[in-house]
Image (cartoon, rainbow, N blue to C red):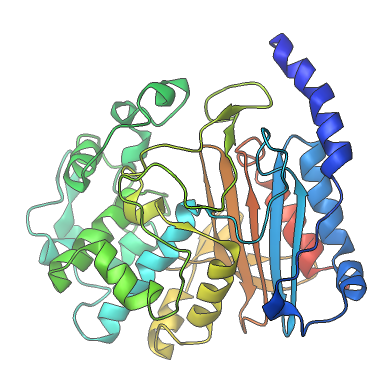
Length: 388
């Protein structure tokens, strides 16, 4: 391992000692919640799991919790290694695949308006678009796009996009159109037949967004704002398009695992997100995500019939996937709904009880721990099972 890694371990120990204390930030709207001391005690296990993440190599960890009338925010480590400031609940970050919940919601809203059916074929809405190398839009349904059983090849896996490994650093400013991304996907054979099994593919949500645009005669981004972001007043959530920077305030993002770099990682905060679009482009905050999932799970965004379809799951290994949502179970028997996002330099997770009373958003500004996914699981277990 390069010498810098060992040097960073010493530096990390210094940073950890200085910033491992959880910072409780209670903005004015939260002043009616329980006393800071009581709140801190209730989340001691959550704080401990966050501290372990920093010891394991995360620069910083942010957690925002809503539990009934109580609101709690915890920050450990640093959001920016240059300034050494801690993460803040108002920080903007990339949501990654949490975007998929937003996209699935758009599609289900159109179904509620009788403008499409989940069992419609892709061919019906995008005639002749999904063809080639074994792909056939006449055999793929909208539902299969949303629950990842379409069998369509994941364009992000193709070397042409330079999205895997160190080559990404030489191509992170490139712009890709949806048509180019779909062409890359269809140049590869499908990994499974439609409906055969769960195969995660970002191409599914690229196609879902194209269907939204075909039906509404508008852009995906316009519909996202008109139907979700603006009505919910998610003022810190945006679809960046090709914009590479994050709005302020924001920290930095550090990549190790995905570009095979040693700790402390390489700053990859700015890059062109156009390859991600409807599958993972959103920029948001912890507060906005907590608000969005409450609105979703309480029926503000979807009628009961569509919400029931969204929460009908299929098995996908250790998790169950619905339509843009994941169902997870804790060791103490609590069922959680939400979505996880991870990419270059970050990991994010939002989960909620089905009644939306207890919600948590987690953000880590590195991908160092994301591949195993154990840190997000540990923090989730600590938060939702702390009374057991």
